Amino acid sequence: MEPSDSDLLFRLTRGDEQAYRLLFRRHERVCYRVALAMVESPWDAEEVVGAAFAELWKKRESVRIVDESVVPWLLTVVSYAAKNQLRGLRRYRRLLAKVPHDGPEPDHAEEVARVVDAASVSAEVQAVLADLGARDSAVVVLCMVEGLTTRDAARTLGLPEGTVKSRLSRAKARLRRSLSRYAPTTEEVAE
Image 1 (cartoon, rainbow, N blue to C red):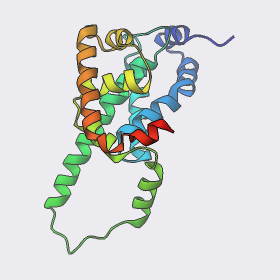
Image 2: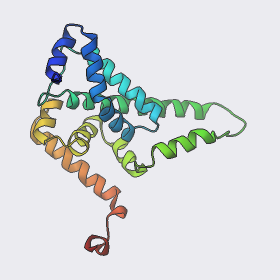
Image 3: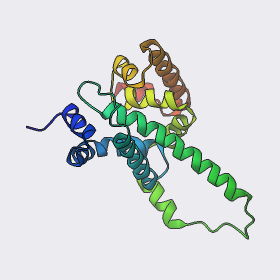
Image 4: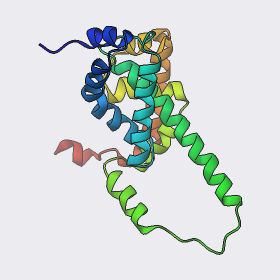
């Protein structure tokens, strides 16, 4: 019988590296999938997931379990790490823009990799998620991507449920406005 996340976390608080490896193998894919939706490249997503699991090790004594799972806590950390990564990337790009250069030398391989890896993730969705605050992004990821109830998301984030509901409502409205051109036509719905 597989040990529960609670059991593994208890073992982790005692320094059990095997428990850490089991938690990583169990939840790395869902964390990577969410990270990839929030950042620009698969390498950035890997870095975000690594940061989330490093935090799991570092803060193992204070991790919140929701319904016997560390996934909500991990996804919250992934959301914050992705926001930090994007902020750093924007600062880096601003710095590069200030450096004098002869002319742009585009890297074709990077562009191809980005397009292939992000094919299933709409640029508009990424832009809206990037514009949301870190807590709003966490609410969207927990409720809309991972399917947590607003009650569970509120417990995970340490917020009142009403706050989570209002943030989710605002985020959904913003997504609807931003993505309205992708809404199905009446004919498409009828089919």
